[in-house]
Structures are given as structure tokens and as C-alpha cells.
Length: 635
Ligand code: HDD
Image 1 (cartoon, rainbow, N blue to C red):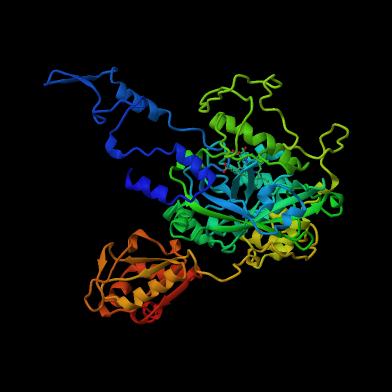
Image 2 (cartoon, helix red, strand yellow):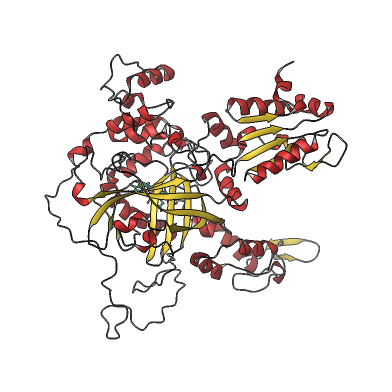
């Protein structure tokens, strides 16, 4: 077994899904030799079979099965990317309900109530607008899709890092997505959600006002996937053992708090390190800082459905936490990176319709449409026969391409005289509900109000976000509208379209989500050194940072051994000044050193820029003696 494969296995944590994947993981040693797809050893993979008499070399021969297979497999490598959320990063982990989880009052789904269970999980984070090769740090919503491999079947919470959605009814999804995606005539812009067709659409579709405010806030430029909240957004239902039904919303609260980049950083990192978030997730897990979230639920009893000024089935509204408190039910931990991106992260597929017994749907019209769309799109992207729960699967769905399971069963229908696979009463079913009405295309009256919560959101922000649709904005906040109109050279209105109700609410500003304990865990710290640096200043700081769980990097004028002020061997630099930028780090430290050290740093434009830029991005900067920041700026 190769060292790489061995390491991958060693890092595997034990859970049922990992064991399942391990069975399918190829463990061939590299020394065993290259083979064709049909298993025949290949003697030459570099030269196509040619007709040659020794002097002249003639055409390539069609006969070369090895060459043809190699090219033919390559020609067909790609599968269609996701129509939205094409760019993503994923990781494995687990979910465990807390002891005495309050969820047991509302459901008897064991995944949420049984603290002795460890449920394997795969999470895929994503951007929405850009294609697979776009940058990570663009202004956009982030997907937060969680797949739980429960003993009762797969349960997916296909959420975002923003608690509301642009539209109320799934029938508008193709419109909002066409408007936000690159424009049809020139396929511009890539990865950016603020552009002409987007503003055109949201300006004309008032229900988008609330989410547009969120997307133009710092939520849309997260520092890390690990520092975002996740929201199921839609209203689902839970059923308890007394046969009562409750409406529920799902929230993921990050252990590290909610943090964002500043806009200038986001723009720069998009070019400097387009894989910033993807690498951050991998780095944190590999450095022993597995990201964690608490799952919280909001519950509304069925009888209280109409007791709110908004419709609780409207995905453009939050349930204010003052009215419907968060109840913490369990913890999600991501502790294993993927071994092959395509097989795991690209091929994974989530569906809102994947629920397990005692978790159900509501009449939320966005959710109802989603329940159709995911399976439908996955037929194009993946085909069929790919779902892999860890619990047994037994049904009479059969055939089509890529069936790898052999159903050693003589019948494929129900009923059958052998009594194979009867439907069981404990299986998934909702409570009986009366459904009646006049067939018509309508939305409930409360769905018509679009600005109250948008105002509350804007009022609750500590800083005004920039660049909002001022057409809509004047329904939300007059001062902000004037400010934006002035900045973008638009018409400045004389009066507000409607007065601001002035209310604020908890849980909307991301400053409401700071870690319970301040921590530097998993933060990237750059230690700038050069020949002549003071070794103990650097090593003591590095040790202290590591002890706190941070990830320090030594950056120097060259990658290699850097000598100390006493001429000793010093340290090995992880990176070259030119290969890195301050934007890629959370804080900066410069140790002391001798005169040569100070001079090297002061005369290096990149270092001076590093410090000025980190300062402008409000980052922590520390220096000692010759490394003192004063040395750089005070003549
Ligand atoms: Fe969606 C993918 C989240 C509304 C149709 N969606 C997708 C993914 C996430 C979300 C995280 C990526 C899953 C992955 O990593 O594979 N979508 C949301 C949220 C919504 C939402 C939080 C609002 C509450 N989506 C929504 C609607 C529709 C879709 C209303 C269609 C009617 N979404 C899709 C899709 C995708 C998708 C086209 C693309 C790839 C896929 O499903 O498997 O079907």
C-alpha cells in the first residue's frame, strides 16, 4: 500500500459511511504496474503504436487499444456541473444529539434524540453563482448542504449561510438564477452576484428585498466555511410520539463564531488564492482543528401557525429568535477530508426530499418545488443508481446504467407470494391532514409584505453594507438609499417610500455570533523573518501560537534555511515573501533581529506592503525591536 493511501486510511475516523467508502477505495500499490481498464498490464504509456521501418516513422495505428482507451476515457471524463452551487468543498464527519436533547418533545426521529448514536455525515459547502473553476471568495450566498447517513435512511438538510431566500415560490427559481448567473449574451460576470441583470430582476421583484440586503452584507464574503452559520431556510415538520406535529426550522451555529473578510481582501484573494476556502477547510481538519457546529431548532406548534404577522411558510422571512427561541439539540463535527474530490465531493448529491421518519415537509411553496427539482437535476448530472445510504436498501426499483448491486432476489414486484419486502407501518408517513381548496395560482395575503424584516435586518447591522439596489432600498431605509444613490450616481429620492419602523432584532447581526470563548484556534499567523532574525523571539511565539491551536507559518525572502542573529541555522521558511500575501493570514508577527535583519525587511517593498495592507484590513500586527512596526513607518 502506498504511503499516501496508508496515511489516508490512518486519518479515517471510524463511522459506518467511512467503512462503506473504504470498501470501494482502491488500494493498489504503485509498484503493481499500470493496467488498461480491462486489467491488462501496459508496457508503454508514452508512445503511440506507429508504423516504422527503423528509418522513417509512419502514421499512428488505430490498432493501439491502449492509446485509444487512454484518449477515449479522457474525452469523456467530465460530467455536467451543478446548474447552481457548482463550486464546492466537502468533508466527512459526524452528528451526535446532546443528552436530553429537547428535540425529543417534538419528534421521535432517533438521529435528533438518541445521544448514544453517532450519525455519519458529509457536508458540502459551495458558492452559488460561479462555475466549478470560479474563485472561493466572491460576493455570493454560500451553500451549506448536510447529508446525515442515519440508520433510518439518508436525511439531507440542503441549506445556505443566509436564513432567507430570494423568492417565495419555486416557480420563480429559473428567473432568479438566470438573472444572477452570467448574462446570456457574453457570459459575464463569473462568480459575482451583483451585476446588471441581477439588479434588474431584484429591482422589479420586491420579495427579493430581504435576502438582497443579506447578500450585500458581510455574510456574503465569509472568512471561512468554518465561520458561517447554516440555515435549512425552509419550514419542515416534526412529529412526536403523541402524534403532534410541529413546524421546525434548522440552524447550524459555528463554534468559532461568524466572521467575514473585508471586501478588499475578498477581491484580492479571489486572484491571489482562488481556492482559499477549500484549502482552509482541508488545512483546519488536517491540523487537528475539526470545525464544529451546534444544531439548533426553532419550533412552532401546529395550532400557532397563524399567530404571527408573517406567514411562517414564507422562505423570505426569518422566525425572530425573540419570538421563537433557538433550542440546541446536537453537535456536528467535520473531522475527515476527502480522498478523491471527484468521487466524493463532486458526485455527492443532496435532496430536500430526503427526510427520515418523523421529519416531514410543510406547505412552504419553495420547499414543495425544491422537492421536485433536486432529483430531477440529478438525473442529468449523475444518472441513477448512485444513492448510498448506510442502512439496508430493499426495494423493487431496478436496472438502468451503472447498477453495481446484484439483487439476488427472484421477485421484483409487490405483492409477491414469498412475502419479500412488504411495506411496514413504522415506515415513513406523515400525519393525516385535510387538504381542500379551489385550484388557483395564489400566495397567501401575508406573503405580500416584503419590507418589514428587511428593515429590521438593516437596522440590526452595526455597519451599513454597501451597494444595494436603491430602487428597493427606499422601501427599507431612506438614509441608506440616499447614501447608495449618491455613491453610484443614481437618482436621490426626496422622501422615503415608506417610513422605517426602527425595530431591531437579535441574531441578525453577525456580531451576535462570536465564539463562547475567544479563540485563535485554526487562525493562520504569518511570522516574517529574514537572515539575522532573533531565533528565540520567533520560536517562542511559534510555540505559544501552536499551543493555542493557531497555525503559524514562517515567511522569508527565500524558501529554505534562514540564519539567526547569532549565525545559527535558525528556521526553515515555509514560504517566500513573494509567494504569499497578507490577505491569506489572520495576523502578522515580526520578531526582533540584528541590523541586517531590519534593513532587509525595511528595504523589501513586499514586506512594507504586507504590513500596510494588514493594518488596512484591521488585522492584529505584533513586532519586537527591529521587527517593531514603528521601524517601518517612522523615519
Ligand atoms: Fe437549491 C443545489 C440550497 C432553493 C434547485 N441548492 C443546491 C445546493 C444547495 C442549495 C446548498 C447545493 C447542493 C450540493 O452541494 O450538491 N436551494 C438551496 C436553498 C434554497 C434553494 C437553501 C432555498 C431555501 N434550489 C432552490 C429552489 C430550487 C433549487 C427553489 C428549484 C426549484 N438547488 C436546486 C438545483 C440544485 C440545487 C438546481 C443544483 C444541483 C442540485 O440541485 O443537485 O436542483
